Structure formats: structure tokens, C-alpha cells
Amino acid sequence: MSLNYKEFATEQIPLIDQEMMSFLKGHNQSELLVEAMNYSLAAGGKRFRPLLLLGTVDFFDIPLEKKHYSVAASLEMIHTYSLIHDDLPAMDDDDLRRGKPTNHKVYGEAVAILAGDALLTEAFHLVSETTLDSSLKVELISLLAKASGASGMIAGQMEDMLGENKQITLDELQKMHSKKTGELIKFAVEAGVTLSSDNMEVKKNLVEYAECLGMAFQVKDDLLDVIGDEAVIGKKTGADAAHDKNTYVSFLGLDGAKEAFESYCNQAQKSLNQSKVLLGYPEKETLLDAILEELKVL
Amino acid sequence: MSLNYKEFATEQIPLIDQEMMSFLKGHNQSELLVEAMNYSLAAGGKRFRPLLLLGTVDFFDIPLEKKHYSVAASLEMIHTYSLIHDDLPAMDDDDLRRGKPTNHKVYGEAVAILAGDALLTEAFHLVSETTLDSSLKVELISLLAKASGASGMIAGQMEDMLGENKQITLDELQKMHSKKTGELIKFAVEAGVTLSSDNMEVKKNLVEYAECLGMAFQVKDDLLDVIGDEAVIGKKTGADAAHDKNTYVSFLGLDGAKEAFESYCNQAQKSLNQSKVLLGYPEKETLLDAILEELKVL
Image (cartoon, rainbow over all chains, first blue to last red; front, side, top):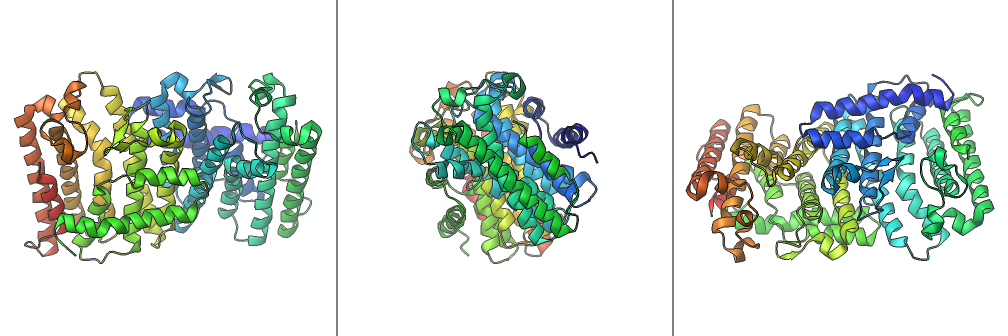
């Protein structure tokens, strides 16, 4: 497997997509519903979370199989449903996502709500029907529900909404992000480990890697809103400041946010290196290194 | 256990409710989110689906335990999420449900969307964490996702929306209802059997009972909109005709719809009797008889 992130992504994304599309095609009847679900699934996502999951499996030198793609696909379906619902007029009211009209702009609000509900439900359906030991399926379903549910991603979304136009602390901002985006990123790595190894010490270190990666991911998002190239990031910059949003930059300033970003990246690298030491290949270049390197580029 | 439906309901509903509330309380952090979820869970539902599940377990003379209440609670959580989302302005735009303000009227649309998403996610979470064999959990999660997902309840909701203000056939109406409401009712019985018995012949007959019950349930709903007592059914009558809705009454007339209703009830009774014969107690009065008797009252 290629250790260059872009080659890895180019190689793997069609396989992740095929897993999502073939599952949905095999299980559905309402054409318009499936069309709306596929529209958002196909809308050019970077597939960061499923790639991270697959990269974690590869970290253990385990060949990628159908079962890995199933769990990766279910994760991307959950992520996609959350974007559809977040974009709704009652929520963030976004007309564009990755440069394309959002789901409700194309299909109307009612269909967008149902397409989100269906992606969420079918994500659990997919894990329940893949070829894996029942006990592993249950563990993964429990982890996925926890990460995306009422004390995970959805709680983060609530806190984000309640914090708008309100003075919050940096600590509250971090906690909100660790739920809203961090939990699914952590799940990607946790699920990858769960599918690959019983080594709890390695798991602990890789979960730390994932947590730091998740924080860096969010600080980067805030940084790019200030210093990013609109053509590259696919959305207008300066939106956070215009909306007086709480961001790492508004708390720490541009330089402070950059320092925080580097610090999270360094911590992620340290935890990753420790995992490699534990597994006996301290010098190995892995996909998880490549993912971190890719993230580091501002 | 009491064989009177009302006594059974009075006895069991607090136990179903306790299971839902204690699970949510133990797993959540965002107070407002939990409050919004609890608001709709507590809004006076008749708990028809979970009672049907528990009644099915009792049909096999199996004492009700924690695991049964967990699955029953998850089913009610899925049903409740679907009501919250159906009531949204973009969907049916209802201000009242069972005589109380709908979720979005109290908490706003954004919170209502998230409360629905959270109930859906936590329903799968609950089944994944209950005390049951992993293989049974996976089977139940798969059945529940199928019943409520993109080829089940959500497909029915889509077809219902697309059929509004449009000429459809009686066959299309029936197919839509069998997905929109029938699938979850069927799941109640299927899950009850799955938790209780490996007898496939009994399962087949009880699933037929559930399917007829589901159809009778919907015809009754249409009938009550014409002949019901507003004080008893908790909503205004005549709404279907006022909205020119496709209903069993609009297709078959009042007498024809009553005949169809009786026919479904009789078929349900027949399948139920056959299940009792197969189990060696043809004369036994069961909770599933009591549930059917209760449904028969117009």
C-alpha cells in the first residue's frame, strides 16, 4: 500500500464509495430517497474519517477486506447525515457545501431530513449485516452510537448552537469540538484498532493520536478560515470573524492558534511513535504518519 | 400477568418508561437535549408498539426481564423520533400532538431535529448495550434498522409525502402504510418472537398476525378521523377529508372501510389462533388476544 496520502486516498476512496453505494442500492426502494442520500454521499467529501480507519487497520499490517470497508462506509454515512442536517435552514442554513448546493437546496427540506435519518439508520444496518463476529459488530455499533449520539457528536452540535452569540471559555470551545468533530475521528481509530488488535497499550496510544489529530483538525479549520485559499478549501474565508464566532483564532490570536496547532500535531506524532515502539517497528513509515503529514499542511 | 389490555398497559408502561429514562439519563450530558428527548418520550404515548413486543414475549410464557424492556424501549424511541421529525414545519407542520405542543413548538426546530437524531441513535445504542447474546443483539439491530430505515418506515414516509395531492391507487396506499406504520408494528412482534422462540412456523403465523394488526391499525386511524370522538382520540376529526387526503375511507367509503377493518381483525385472529394451536394451547386467552380486542373497539 502506498504511503503517500494522496495516492492512498486515490486508491481507497473508490472502494469506500463502492461499499456505500452497493449497500444502499441493495436495500432500498424509494428512488428519490436513495437519490438524495447518494447526492450527499457523492458530493466530493475528502473521506478523511474512513481513510483514517483504513489507515489504522493497515498500521497493524492487516490486509484491507470487505469488513473494513463496511465499517468505514458506515462511518462516512454517519458523517454525511450530520452534514445534511447541520446545513438545514433551522440549523446552520447553508446553501453550499464543498461548492455544491446543499441537500435541501436540491431536494427540499423534507427530503433532506429523511435522507439524513435514512443514512443514520442504514449506517447501523450496514455494520449489523457485514461479515464479522457478532461480538465485534456489537462492540462497533456501541462505539459508533456513543460517538455519534446524545453524549457525542449530537451533544457537541447542541453546545455549538447554544454557544453562538454567547461568551464561552476556551475550555468550553475545546469540549464542544471534541464532541462535535473529535468523537467521530476518535471512532475511526478506535474502530480500526478494534478490528485489528487486542493490544490495549497500543490502543491507548493510538486513541491519544486520534484525539490530538481531532483537535489539530479543528484548529486547522479555524486557521484556514483566516489564512486559507478559497479555491483550495472550497468555501469563503473570513466567515467566522464576520459571524463573530468563537474560534481558536478569536481566543488565541493567529500566532497562538498556529502554536496550538503545531503542539497538537507534535503530540499526535509522539503518541503514534510510541505505538510503533510498542509494536516493535519504531522506524516504520505508516499511513497514520502520512495522514498526520497531510493534516500538517496549512 | 393481567389479560385485560388496560390493566396490562397500566402495569407495564411505567416499566417501559423507566427503561427509556434511565438509559438516557445515564448516557447524556447536554441538559437541553435530554430535556427535549424526554419531553416527547413522556408526551402521553399509548406505548402500543412496546406493549405489543412485551405481549409477544408473554405469549411464550416467558417472564418479562430487563432485556425485553430494553428492546421495547428502543422501539418506542424510534417511534418517538419519527413523530418529532414528522411534525416539523418542513414535514407535516403540526403544532399539536396528543393535545400537547409538538417538540419544535417548545424547543425550536433545530433542537427538535437533534432530539430526533439523538433518539434514533440512542435506540441502537440501547440494544447494543443490553444484556443479551451478541448474536441476538445483532439480529435485533438488523431487524430494527430494516424496519425503520430506507426501505421501511422512512420509505413509507417518503411515499406518503410524494402521494399528497396526487391520485394514487388503493394498492399504493396499502404499500405506503405497510412501510410507514406496518414495519415497526411487525418489528414489535418479530422482536418478541426472536427473544423467545426458534419455532419458525409460530413466527410465520405471528408475523401474519402483526401484519394484519398493522393494516387494521391504519384503517382504524382513517375511520376515527371520520367517526371518532375528538375528546377520546385527542385530535380534531375531519382533517383527512379537509385536506383531500388519500385514506381507506376515501377509497372504500365508510362502510367499505369498516368491512376492510373487520376483515383485517379477523385475519389477525385467525393467524393468532393458529399460533396457539401450534404451541399446544388452542384455548388460551393471551395478551395478543387482548391487544387485538382493544384495537377492535372503534
